[in-house]
Each structure stands twice: as structure tokens, then as C-alpha cells.
Length: 261
Length: 261
DNA sequence: TTCGATTTGTTCGTATGTATT
DNA sequence: TAATACATACGAACAAATCGA
Image (cartoon, rainbow over all chains, first blue to last red; front, side):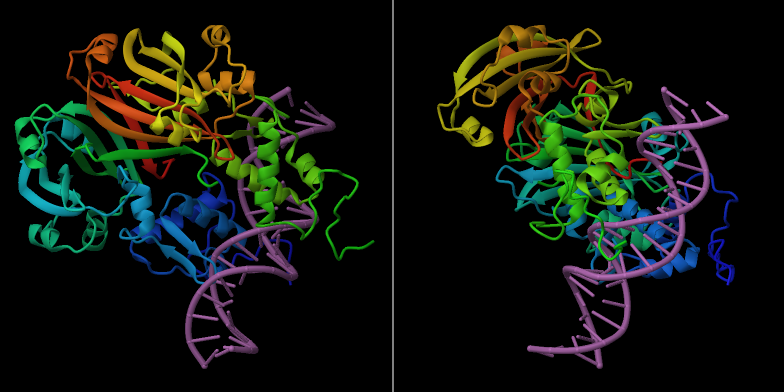
């Protein structure tokens, strides 16, 4: 038996070619393969992936290489590992999702998923700013949805969501309205669009008459204004969200540096 | 030669005892040891640590275990690695520090270290809120410093810093004023206090008369108000900072999810 | 309840590649 | 060129968690 070279298990159609076409480290190639399969829905929403040993055999690399690839995806909150059970694609309903992507916390430290109520939904054309943010042509068709979010029964957040029609070709408002999950999970289940990265820009703004009325605060009240762009694994812009938060009883919490301890 | 057990190199006084007293994984024990040495100033500010092989010998563990411990400290922005050169304790002046801890960015995407001008500095007593945040008794002596920070010559941020006298027993205002580095680096160099973790709470507030005057904005203007607690490796509160940011030409930027690509 | 199979978690050791000096 | 140090990859072994028979 030949032990001089790793067995490439050439029979497997997913085996990575040794040496050739690797623009970088092997574990990153494996990571991309796994991310691609995730995007393609091969293992969806809370389901378990094949074991590390099986993935190693499939890609014809050592278990340690698969392990490093999975480790990065875990750090990015795309996968979660459970000893003795397996590795799972994160559910966008899970606590880890709340932990990772929702930063509005009550003054008493309470954190929960907000309840959502739709205010409006209509087709609009991309203005210059939206065209730039969403990488579409000016005037391109967008879908605009406005929501009011409540925490413990109190209206706290006004959201304006804009998504390119091109990314969601068969967007169905009724289905959106009747969803019983988060918006991101709706994107993924219904349109196979997975949000992997968010960039948020926070500033303070004085409430205009309409938002003041919707949030039940005086005109001119200082609100936290958040502009947020969501993109997929490969950087494609998917959603732009314009958020106004009443910070009378809530704050946006951000933790930097060491995580544990 | 006995190969049945890893050689514990018992000659080294830093060697970790096998099996005994390990409340968790070995690599976490190594990580704590390294962090403790960092705190003690064994390798300070931008200086290089011993090589991974040397550290492995010192703690009598395998190179892979040291590598994992260092990897976590790198993720937490406490160390930086450079292939071919070594592993370094982060300098609080470095770009990685700016990247990790300073989130105020110009509307054009420009990011820079702010210029600081001291407005006031005096001894105060801890009120109830400060006592709770800084883990000191009510009425305990604090040092309070107020600064105005400028970006590109424009005054953008008003800071009120409060630190417990107990943490900085021989605090010297003249030295603080004349420092030519960041405040965190001053803490570390002058008082051997290393900030490892920040928790920021952001909200919107209307500018009162004093802050409006200092920032050169109208009274009632919406400002971004940031309350930030800084702690050391072991969770000891070190500094509470109260920050008011004019977001006319700047925003607080936060990136979530995948970091690269 | 116990046992065994499966899967991830941790640790070890080694070899080779690449960047820096 | 040579030496040093980190980066990547491999494979092996055992521990710990989980789950079902």
C-alpha cells in the first residue's frame, strides 16, 4: 500500500485536486465548499451536517483540515457544534442568532425577539443611494416594507426594509406577512438567500412627525438611527434596512474584546 | 526511552502538572498563563513573545496546544501573529487597536485616531450608579476627566471618564495630560492596568446646554450617547466612560458576522 | 439503568511550506 | 544562503457528551 501520498480517494466526485487550482490554504477551499453546499441548501436550517470524518473522506483531506474549516464557520455563527451530536447549520430562530445579530436590549438587561407588525408594503424604484448600497441600477425595482417592532408590548423600533426585486424574483407579500419566523429565515427558506454579514451605521436623529407618531414619542425626540446593509457569503447585497429606535427604555449593546471570562 | 507518557520536562518551573488541578481544557490553562504573564508585563506593548516552540517547552505541552491558546488571544485582539517574525503583544497605538476599539467613522469612510483636549479633571465621589458599575462603595473616591475629541479638526466627541482611585492609586494628572499615547496605553504603561474587554451601551439623547456648547451644536440636537465600561482580563472594572457623539458627519460602525470576504 | 456506538473535543507529534531576517 | 518562526496539513489516540438499544 502506498503511504507516500495522501489517498485522494479519486472515486469521490467531491475530492479536491491536490496542488492544482488552490489559490490559498486547503482549509479555506474546504470552507468555501461547505459554505457553498450550505447556500445550495444541501443541509438546511438546524439540520446536521455529515460527521467531520465523513466530510474529510468526501473532500479527501484530513479530519484536522475539515475541523479547521468548520471552526471558522462556527466563529462566524454559520454553524454550531455540539459534542456527541454533530455539527448543525444555524437556525435563524435560535438563541445564537439573537445573540449575534440583535443588539437592542432593555434597560434591565432583558433581551428578546421583537414582535413585528407590518405598516406598509409597496414596490418602489431605487434612488441614487439605494442603487449604490444594493448594487443595482438607479430606478431598479425594489420592494419596500415598513414594520413596527415591539418589545414586551411596547413599540420600540420602526424598520424600513428595501430589497432588490432581482434578488427576490417571486417575492410574495402574503407569504411574507404570514411567515412565522424571522425575516432572515424567511429569506433563506423561501428564496434560498442566506444573510452572512451585516454592516451597521449608527447615528442619532431627531424624530420627524411620521416616525414620532408611529413610535408614540414627541416630534424632535432623539432616536437611534441605524442603517444596515446585509450581504450573502459572496458579498452580494441582499437587503438595506433603515431602523429608528426609541432609546427611552432600551439601548444598543456592543461587546468588544474578550468574549468569555 | 519511555514513550508511554508525554515528557513533562519537570525541570521547568512553569511546567503544567499533568491531570491535576485542571478545571478545563489544557489549552485554556495555557491561555490563562500567557494572559497572566501579559498582565504582569513580562512581555509588554508591541514586544515579541517567545516562539511557539519555546512556550511549548516552557509549559511542557505540545506546540499545537500553545498554538490554540495563542489563537484565541489573537481572536481577542490581545496578541498579533506575523509569519516569519513572531507573536506580539498588541500595542494600544496600533492599527489593530483602532480597528478593534474605535468605531466612529466619517461619512466618507475615513477612520483616524481622534485628537484629544482636556476640559476638566477633578476628584469626585462615586454616586450609586458609578458604585454599581465600577464595583466600588458608594462615595468611594474617583477621578473624573472630561475631554473633547476632534476628528480632522472638527470637535465630534465629548468624553467623561471616571476611574476608581483604588485602581490608579498614584494617578498623576500632569502625566496623564502629557501622555503621547492612547489612554489605554497610558493605563498599561504607567499603572500596569490592561483593558481587555469593553461593553458599550448606545442610545440617543438630546444635547443639554453644556454639551451643546462644547460640541458646537444647537441645544436639543440629537446626539449619540455611549456608556462604556472597560474591564481587565479578570473582569475587574477599570473605567467608565460617558461619551456624546455628534453624528452630523460621523457614524458608529459595527460589522457583524463573517469578517473576511 | 446500563451499555455501546457515534460524534465532537482535546492533545499529541511530525512534516512541510512560506515569510522574515 | 541559512536560520528562525509562524502557517498549514496530516494522522493518531483518548476523553467527554449524546443517544438509542
